Length: 104
Image 1 (cartoon, helix red, strand yellow):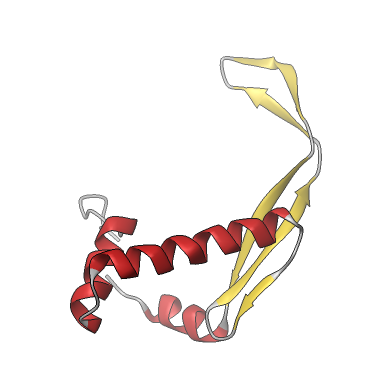
Image 2 (cartoon, rainbow, N blue to C red; image 1 turned 90 degrees about the vertical axis):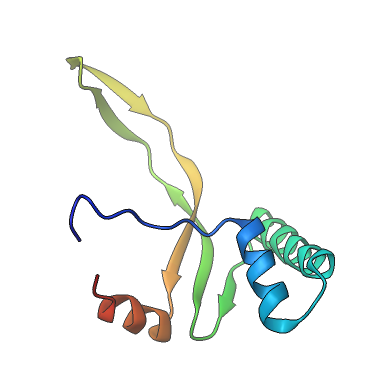
């Protein structure tokens, strides 16, 4: 990709509008379903559950270990970054193939 090309961002609002148009469903109905889906995902992940969507990917909570970081302005002063939980996404086969074949 060249540095001058700009990537598009799909916002929740744009996603709702797009699905609403493609499926001829009222935007409010799409909004409610998408928000319920996102809320359920957030709740499952916060409970430590793993979410698996075939061909799409897997979301799971992983523990990031404590590490030593550096402030670029004061490189001689180490900063301890504490361990923390983070969400990890691993793409499924179908998504991985589509992304790998993506050529801009």
